[in-house]
Length: 222
Length: 227
Image (cartoon, rainbow over all chains, first blue to last red; front, side):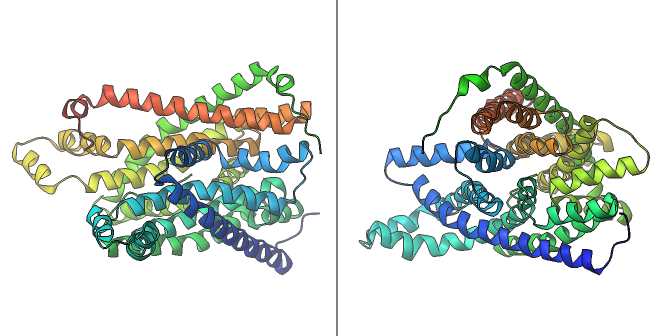
């Protein structure tokens, strides 16, 4: 055992990094679709729909992602619903991301000035038309900087998929370390790769925010 | 498919769950206090006249905010061990969480500092307040008051994120859950209970911060504004 870091190790880490990007995209798309539904449900004219979606957001935002992951992977397996690590990680991340993106987008939709709603209503547009043609195009502009900022959180959170054995960047780092016994060097490399993925997105989000001329406090997750 | 749930069998372990929840709160409390201190210093440092100090603070904040907590915990864990510091997993967890939340706090505090009107500082200088008095009364306290809701959310998120510390087998709620589920083979019930406990803990923390806010910022209560 032991040995030195070689090209094969780096190749293996690169492969893991690709899966980190893949899992992030799955979480972004899945969480985006569900989150969009949540955002609309949060401002629904129906009280019961509003309450249900609010309860969903509160429950997910009050639970650590790690516990949701354990529930999806070990919990469901214990009652007879076995999922692969990829399926469990994708499902957990989707549910988790949806709760946060749903709230970000609800805020964006609601920060479209009130007269816009009233004007659209005055033009006899239906609720769907008001949403699609007047409100959403403006809400998307407002939502872009925080959404890009949240993508950083998604990438970082995919590292938790390693604990259910899904081989993304973090897990591949642990595997490489198991043969090298150089934890500090290996994890420093892993950290650098995560930084290389996240920092450009952070900068882009800040740039978009400045362009919007609104210095809202950054949405952040540990 | 028949699903049998047996919550009582797991709830029997309530002293363990309770102990885990208390340890998680303890972990969150220690990291919040020290992280708030470091974060405030880093936020002040970023506005320092010395280019070097401002640079160091910026690198710290960006490096932490753009890497996962799990990686940071492992780095601290093995980093401290490699320089010969043998600390308990719980201590390592406190150190790692402090470093982590410090960076987020710094960013929130910076936003608070930037929101202080320049004229107020000039007015304070005109009134011959000392540098320390200006920092304390004109900049720090009003800034904290302004970003208090954001800080509250961040510290609650920190408490939830502390579950990751179970990966270096630091004693806290999730680690206790992992132990109980491997003992009872009732993973589903165990993690449902733990999820409920985390939700309760976050409610307790929010209520605590709300109460603390009433004591710390009586002016805000009187004005009745969100500032």
